[in-house]
Image 1: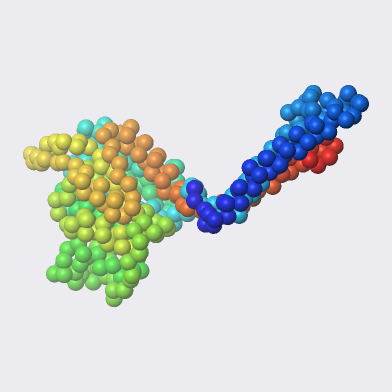
Image 2: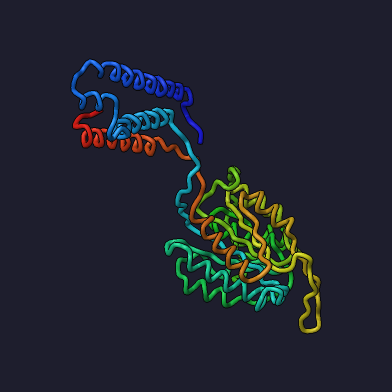
Length: 351
């Protein structure tokens, strides 16, 4: 905890001075008590009987004063606050290696099941978009709050060859900012293949209007949308994932990366062909770091579900430096009121 006006904390020196004054008053009352003939008055002055009761109200008052001084010093604390996400983009790897069975029943089915569980935990108002990527990337479901449409889109995944992690990030970014003029086709395929304005099946962004200038913002500062990127391999084609991550970071969008499968790598075979797949954890960690997100490793289906549960909490709440003066002031008022009430109840006077 920090304070906006720390010099005001010097006022806390008043508290020990008041403690000393209280002790001196008690000593004076004890010395004066012997002048009275009434034994009851002497016992009351000496504090016998319910001795502890007479000290409780002053103690509560001193605590109230301490908290009050702390409040005028404008305390600032790190607290968790609800975060209103307008959109969450699930960018999921559908490369052929996702049929590997090291994550039961296989990587793809485990990822699909975990994604559906993730959707159930999100607030109903949160829109979710789904991007799939292999050799290229595409939007399989535009951001929507319809959980039925999202589940249907997840069930439609078709495995393909290649792993273009950078393409998945670029398409996810263009989905979040559809009016930003992001030329997805040029970024993914290069200038030679960018002129497909009349192609109805052209990738998202290839028919965009003129590019719009924008000023890069602080990474992680855009709180209205996040990207959750899941992959089990390393880039084999498409743009550099780190360059794509730089674009995402410049627009302030966080990327939470999830690596699923075997860290050491394994051979995957299907219909006469085989390939060696290895999880590129280093790149996924850098993507998360550049965008102020977080990297998670899922070695099995249980881990994957737990990760999505954790992500639910991450994107629903955020840590923020917030001034808590009002809370301190309320606590000080409560302590002062309690001190006065107990004093009236026990001693029929306020202190």
